[in-house]
Length: 179
Image 1 (tube, one colour):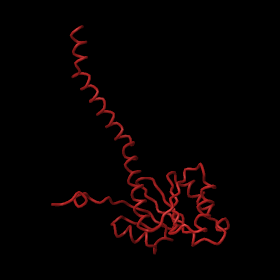
Image 2 (image 1 turned 30 degrees about the vertical axis):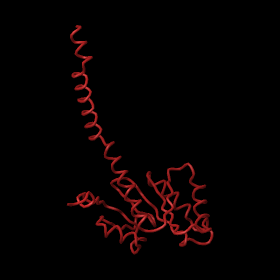
Image 3 (image 1 turned 30 degrees about the horizontal axis):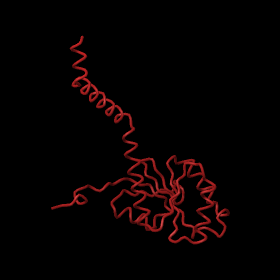
Image 4 (image 1 turned 180 degrees about the vertical axis):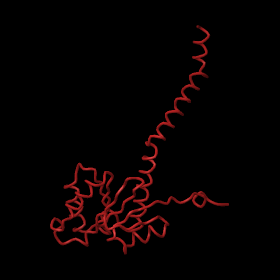
C-alpha cells in the first residue's frame, strides 16, 4: 500500500540562480530535488529567482560581510534587489543568534521597514530550500488562480452554480406559481 507522499508527484520548477551561488550547497540541494537550476551572471549576487511565481530570494551570510555592515554596500544591493523584484525575500543566514547576526538583522529591518521586502532569518540550508520552495509554490498557485483564463472559468462556474441554486430553490418555485 502506498502512502500519500509516495503517490503525490513532486513539484519541479525552474530556478535562476546567481553564479555566485554556483558552488554553494543550496544549488546542489535544488539540483538533487530535480529542479531546473539555471545559473546567470546577469542576476544580482546571491539571488535565487523563481520566474513562474514571480518570487525572488536574496541569500545573505553576515559572516561574508566586513565588520561594519554599512560599509559593505549590502544596503544598496538589497535596495536594488527590492526595486527589481516585486515579491522579494531576504534570506539572512544566522545559524546561531550571535551579536553580529542580530545587529545585521536589526540594521536591515530598520532600513527596509515598510517596504515590500520580507526578511527570513534561516538557520540551515535544508530550512532555506524548504522555505523557498513553499513560498514559491504558494505564490505560483496565487498567480494561476488570478490569471485571466482562471478568473473567467471561476466566474462562469459561479454563475452556473447561482443559476442552478435559483432555479431549484423552493422560494423561486413559489414565486413562479404566484405569477
